[in-house]
Image (tube, rainbow, N blue to C red):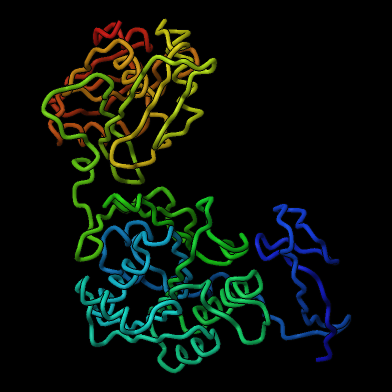
Length: 450
């Protein structure tokens, strides 16, 4: 087939394309990132091989998922990995991405799966040292230290592994491109090669990806569109807790959460996350309230902590950790306007214990109660859980999946639960007393925070 070359310029940072060279990328605004790329395109009238349409009834059913053997990872993947899929795992340096996938590779090999681990950043000795430390030594696990994507594809075709782990995609390069590894062209080509390989061999491919200073995956957004599943590994480097989230999953839910703890022997699954997120103290203190939140199918009890202090600034601070700062601003406004809690001359700091990020509205009532408790310097009952969405009118609205939240609160020994008086329940644990509240002002009066 006769082909013609077409030249255009692509930004190495964001993937923006232009027919002519520009000193500054019009999309991301960074200077000096436009690089020329030549692409062969068929001439007009040329026709290549075309796929024939299939009847829906002749399409084969999806193959059973491949269970990794790490419960938290399987949960986030939707019950296991789908053969022929591409999974991209991103996270900050040192967060534990390589450790997680090494443990997953060892677990899969122990189940009889053929697994090949490709490393473009570490030597075989370094990987072996980590494997011994984490107890992931498996003599049947195949290891390849290579940065040439063509060599990786050739080795995978010869070995035909069921699972392929590539650490990392930014370290891979295609010899047919003259750009450096990690560039837009290299990333797109390497991911495309891995995608074709996964579909051809019906293997599960795990790709490790780096993140930028802004906390997003490095490279063009096109990479996230090409893969089937995008996972983020989060956590503070000086904290042992690690949280695995799915931001894209073609074969499962994106609301599931995996919780790990980094130990000397590698990553360990957290069996009872609620005990981890609850603050352990003997005596109640002002500014704390317990809330049950839902992360996928899992209910978690977390502690909301608030600190209200006098402000010397014309515009007092509203700082949140673990929740949306805009939601905090709304809760503060509702408290001041509807419950007459004076906060205009106070700085308000709110955080979720344990490093968890919560975005659901069921947190509102607990946040309002914790702020008012800190402002009035009065404690809330430690055996009470607060659940409810607070509207702009100050009313406490019912929330979803209430029965599951009640069971988790009862399991952890809570005795009462404050919720909207409009909430309806099919059943509730006998050991829990329900306290219905109409609005925020009513809730504060009920618990003596006035």
